[in-house]
Amino acid sequence: MAVGTGGAVATVDPLATEAGLAMLRRGGNAVDAAVAAAATLGVTEPYSAGIGGGGFMVIYLAETGEVVTIDGREEAPSDPEFDEDVFLEDGVPIPFFPERITSGLAVGVPGTFATWVDALDRYGTVTIAQALQPGRVVAQRGFVVDQTFADQTAGNLGRFRAITSTADTFLVDGEVPEVGSVFRNRDLARTYHLLQREGLDGFYSGELAEEIAATVQDPPVIDDPPFEVRPGLMVIDDIEHYEVLHPDPTRVEYRGYEVFGMGPPSSGGITVGESLNIGENFPLDTVDDVAFQHHVLEATALGFADRNAYIGDDRPQYNYVPTTGLLSQAFADERAALIDPLAAAAKPVAPGDPCDEDGSPLCVPDPAASAAAAGTSTTHLVTADTWGNVVSYTLTIESTGGSAITVPGRGFLLNNELTDFNSTGDGPNLPAPGKRPRSSMSPTIVLDDGAPFLAVGTPGGSTIITTVVEILTNRIDRGLSLPEAIAAPRATQRNTSTVGAEQAYRDLYETELSALGHQFSSRAEIGAATGLEVLDDGTVLAAAEPVRRGGGDAGVLRPSG
Image (cartoon, helix red, strand yellow):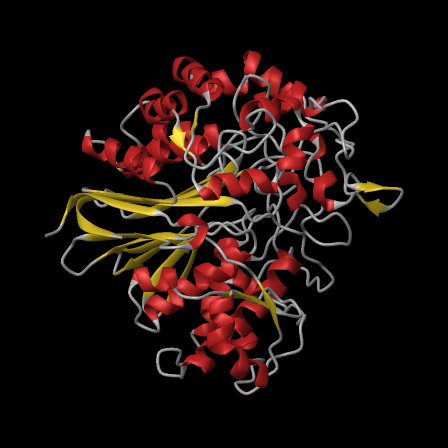
């Protein structure tokens, strides 16, 4: 953690934090810092983020007091064959690991670079060439391999060895880079240099776009791979026509604060908001610790039931999402009435009916939807500047290592984001041409009387939502400091039969929560959050994980004291 003035940055990596601070030091704003930090994470955290992926950015603009968003979610190819059966063979889903995620079919049109360019054009003060420079330098000079990077590489060794370009880029003679060695990615440095010269067109048209499409259509696989690597349907026209979107942020009031998040196709803002609205019905600040945990677990289970039934890509050609109804306090009150303070509900719970509160004739109750699997490798960063602007930004390539397919000679992995679609069943998140898959990313900004108070987010697939709810309720209701709320033991209840929980959480609460009917399963760790808080004296506290994913990093421009 760090406290001070002049601006703040928190990421999962010291080099990325320093890249953001360097932008602030030269007079840039929070958006400039966010893009520079993200571009550096594309180098040092290549298995979690990078220009082969997508993400969502939430921005508070101090000059107008507005909260705005950028949707840089990956998009399915336009080919009609990318239909609801695309991940089925003979009516059976393609095995998720390693085959479905390690395939051209899994790759969506990347939106990350378009997000960076759009953010800088609209709200930044530097050029994309300037914002890419710190990351380019790190890619050229290299960074020291830590245990987390080595472990993530080892966890993907079979997939990486199967793709020639990935083995050439991320392995050393076919093996995991040694901890303490210097890892250089000069291919990515050259790609960043290309994008510095050519900007948006350098990625979304011309040779690089052609190479991305060709790689998706014909992944560079070794002879006799240990599993089938299927070709994808993306063509250069899909890449050339990609655009970021600017949906309205979600907004709820919680304990007098305004909580802003990301709307569809992310389910994060709605599900975090609904869970908090449900929690508003209970005195979470005064109940004992076990009762607090019980109510939070039950609230997120109800929120996830509604998420799975109603949220997907809300563009008119795909779905109507009843955002107004799902975020209404009246609907949350109905859902809260189902919580028994002395007993956990049997899971899964049924979704509710938000249509009366939504008021739209397009809203149709649909209780039959199911959840899709979600990857766990994403990254989150927060930035603030001396003028009061704040950015909360979550970006990803989906699974750790994404699709495991590297564009030859370009130094970056392509995402497997399209596996976020449901492969079977009904509901709003089935595959379709040009559709964006539902996400759980939850970049969040909290305002107090119209001014920034908190900005938080985390990686973790669908556990992102429950982690953000835990951090907010621990900070706002339980009075933990932001660093304490980020470090606290975590559990996740996503309307499943068991509560996934870290061992430290189980040690604290399992016995008493089991007596209420909760059942537990183990998770090694949940999330890797970052956040910032504007303190009463006007200084900013930036915070990151002390332990999870090897620990994060936080810095301020002018430290206090």
